[in-house]
Image 1 (cartoon, protein in one colour):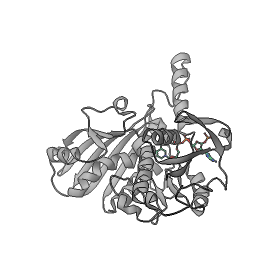
Image 2 (cartoon, helix red, strand yellow):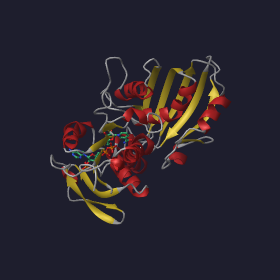
Image 3 (cartoon, protein in one colour):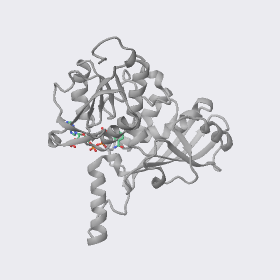
Length: 332
Ligand SMILES: NC(=O)c1ccc[n+]([C@@H]2O[C@H](COP(=O)([O-])OP(=O)(O)OC[C@H]3O[C@@H](n4cnc5c(N)ncnc54)[C@H](OP(=O)(O)O)[C@@H]3O)[C@@H](O)[C@H]2O)c1
């Protein structure tokens, strides 16, 4: 008794990682269908040594699907998720389409699995917010956080496969032909939409999604998000003020027993790429402000910030709900 699953966006940066993880983790699959844009229809992906055709997404794609992973952008999610739900599927969405909706749970399984309740649509959070919260949520439980100041160094894979290719090509052309480039050996403010308050969308997501996941809108948060010319792994410098004094040693001890994270001496993107765990290092007291610690946190955001989190939500649903369901549309 296993699940008929679908990946929407199976050819993309996140979709390909979902595919690898379903394979590696031996997810309880009865069948797997892969969807992408019309441009990819007819291509194939390899799963467990078998070729699976890429299909063009349509209104009928979700008949017989029990669980659909969406990783194709928010417009695709807005249009097709209602159809998938209508067909009886459970949906895990990596896009931002429904994250702000108070009726849709926004889940990091290590932090707030209880928010899922009986939902059939579950949103997976923004990659930068996820990486930050994997380290801060275990501390917040014991020492409530008053204020976070975050500065990010975000990889190009955060913008998808095409942007990764563009960084590689521009770097090559810069080195071989001295062709000017805004990507190679450069960095820039996160290019998401600027709001009337002078914060870009990515910065607002870090603020709003933290409040929703921790269930605490009182935490003061400011963020500055920057794209840096690396392919994988987002890095975050976090200045965190707690309501009470917490020593560096206490923070390290609380984090040592938290799931999904690990301490690394001097973590770098090169060391963290491909790791499922979010890594932290260089915790120190902020000498300029009381009750405040500095953190250096890195995570492969294609994994814990997107694909891994989505697959873990799927595993949670399987163990808590889907495997106990009595009859179709859930079972095969
Ligand atoms: N990248 C990250 O680190 C990250 C982290 C968290 C959340 N997310 C979210 O995850 C989603 C996917 O991001 P990504 O980085 O994987 O992007 P991506 O590499 O650009 O991949 C986009 C995928 O969507 C497919 N697609 C585009 N238009 C479609 C359509 N009309 N119908 C069906 N499929 C369509 C593409 O198919 P083709 O190959 O045929 O074009 C491709 O498979 C986005 O919502 C993003 O915000 C990404």
